[in-house]
Every structure is written in structure tokens, then in C-alpha cells.
Image (cartoon, rainbow, N blue to C red; front, side):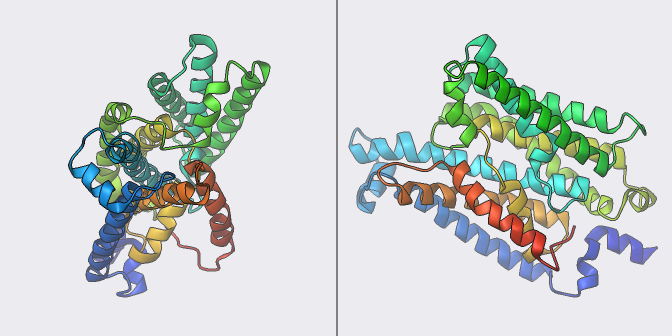
Length: 351
């Protein structure tokens, strides 16, 4: 029994030897914090409009009415904060949903979260005349929450409990239906839905700090829940039967996990629209360094997600000067080859 409990606590890391020892993980955490700091500085220093670093520094620490200060505080600081919040939310949501469904190729969209948020925003624009992100936020979050509840109800309709397979099937099916309805509505009256086209691409540039403050408490609660259930997710990764035998309350863990994913992915989608592949790529990249222990994966994903978002945002500003390329487009371009590579790897990172 001792061996089994150790396996539940550390999953397959123990069976892989000392490749994922605590010193290695702590060193990786320090390096990741360094990379995150560099990404934040790059996001503040680099933009479509070239501003000398000396002026950026002066404008950041001494806000005034100068052009550099206005650019830094009205454009770069808000999108940097949004990128950090959304990156952490999507990274942790992806890690959580992969553990909950025991599917290493899953991402938050698998529960229909993005589709639910997009459909709710489409309804809000079409029937309530929403025209700005302040209105989008609550419609998007409500749509994500309702979609997640529907997926769970559909997945548990036959056997009373929702298995990972039924959750995946229900999420994919509901997402396809909601995306179809959203597309249908936008085609009927393209002018009415013009305002949500850019939102659907996924961008950190159009969200203000005020909007972020509104959603931040929801993201914080989602992160706390994900951290709280991360230990139980290690047991669930071994299978429901073994998890129950080890004392894990599988149903409660799964419900809390779904709530966390809804808060994180729903809130992130509400702020920035659809940003693809972050929830898929980040947990896999993290797992290569820390192993399958969900506790470390959650912490690393909360730091690696912002790095990927901010790096993509900076790249989008540079390669299309004087214009910009939306983050959602770049993550999709990067994510598609990454997905192919993950599928083709003989030793894809397991859960």
C-alpha cells in the first residue's frame, strides 16, 4: 500500500528515477521567472511605434504627458497586464482539463468554453446591441459557464457520472453546434456583427485595465481552485477506480476542476476573445521539464502561459510594423505545427 500511495502522490515521476527531482524543478522555476521578467520588459520596451529605451524607462517611472509616457501607460502596460493574466489563466486551464479528461491533447475548448462564450457574445451583440468589451465580458463569461454545465449534464446523462470520454464527446459536439449557430447569425446580418470580428481573433491590445480588474477576481478564484485540487488530479490520472481506493473524492475533484476551467478559460476568453493552443502547448512544454506531477505543472503553467502570450504579442508588433498581428493569429500559426509534432512524437508527454 505504501508503494501505491507514493505513486499517487508523485505519479509516474518516481518510476522515471530522479529526472524530475526537486532541485531540478526549483532551478527551472527560477529560470522561468527570469524568462517571464524578460518577456514583461520586452512587452513594455518593444512596439509597433519605435520608442527609444531611455524614453520608455523615463515614461514608465515618471508618467507625464510626453508621447513616450502615453504610449507606455495607455498601450503597453495594459496589454502586458492582460497578457500575463490571460496567459496564466489559459495555461492552468489547459493543464487542468488535460488532467481531468486524461487526454494529453485536450485544451479548454474541448469543454465548449470558447464556443459558449462566443455564442453568448453573438447573442448580446445581435439582440442587446453590445458594442464594447465591457458588455462582452459578462455575456462571454455567462456563456462559458452555461456551456460547461451543459457539457457536464450531457456527459453524465446515461451513467449518472461524467467520464473523461463522455465529457470530451459532449464538449466537442456542443462546441460544434454553438459555433454553427454563431456563424449562422453573423452571416444573416454581417453589419450588426462587425464589432465582434476582431474580438473573435484574440487580442490583448483592446482590453483596458478597468476591464481586467473586473475579471481578475474570477481568474484568481479559478487559479486557487486549480491549485487546491492539483494533488487530487495526480490520483485521478491513475484512473477513477484507483483514485477512489486511495481516498480521493473523484466527483468533487472533477466538479471543482470543471469550475476552475470555466472561471479561467471563460474569463480569459471574455477579455481577449479566442486565443488558441495556449492551453494545449503550455502544459506539454512544462511536462517535459517537471514530469507528470500536477502540482508542479499548475505552478509552471501559470508562469509559462504569460511568457508565450507576451512573446507572441511582441512578435506580432515587430513583424508587421507599422501595423500589428493579433496574438490569436500567431498562437494558431505556432500551435498547429506544435500539435502535429506532439501527435507524431513516439514518447509524447503523458499525464
